[in-house]
Image 1 (tube, rainbow, N blue to C red):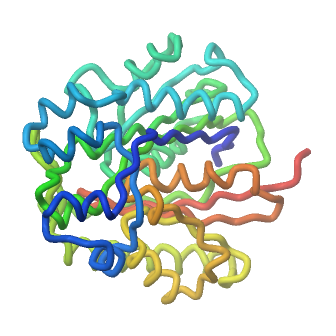
Image 2: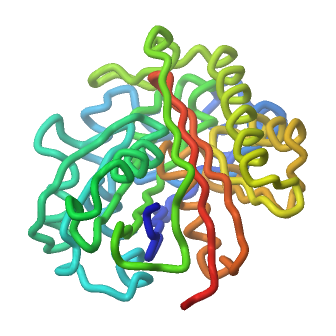
Length: 330
């Protein structure tokens, strides 16, 4: 078990609407986008004029034009998580980060985020693309209690639009930028905790989703969609069985890939709409920050007795799940 003391999220202010994408003249329109992925808006660290003028055809320019870097957006999410946990940055004894598009090959992004927050503590990255948050929590759950500090900060900064080719309509409609952070502990109790950890990978299919160094996001869309639906459905059924739960007393948060994938999983597993927490229609696919940011947005709604199935899929190909539970305050 790992105790969750606080969650935080951050989204940049620039909004990419479907009308904006339509005006790029790349062969798309709002009806096509809504039917294909169910996304209405996304956020970006890039100036909209930059996207309109260049379609981001030179990624080196994107990093120069961006209004924020990963350290800044990750730190913004972390400040919210730390405040909700009721602690100070100096109380953090370990910083773990990871995501799809780190700013630097070296050092670890956890170090740049810690520096932004004024934290002096051990830092390392654990990257597993869109499943990074789940893999990080799974990994930390395997430590012996005495091996972890009282509080660990897990940060997932995702500024994916810098790796999007805005002349490719199949990719341009999907992604947005967002960051999440979590304060966890193995020893300091909290009413909110993670349990029932699981993770796995299918490395033989790694080429199905990738971002080459200084390249653009690319995927075999149909194969990845089938994989995401299959693994998410299997994991959700497994968690329902272990809890002896039904669609009325189990909430579900999945990887925020697209609305269609999530809707199919809910239909197959009998999850009612009011128990399906999501934000992909408003923020797009924000990689590994998507699911934790959804829960962060619902932080004040968490109530004793809640059971939340958190299920992630991503490049690698990888999948992971865990159960978030809420108990009465002691």
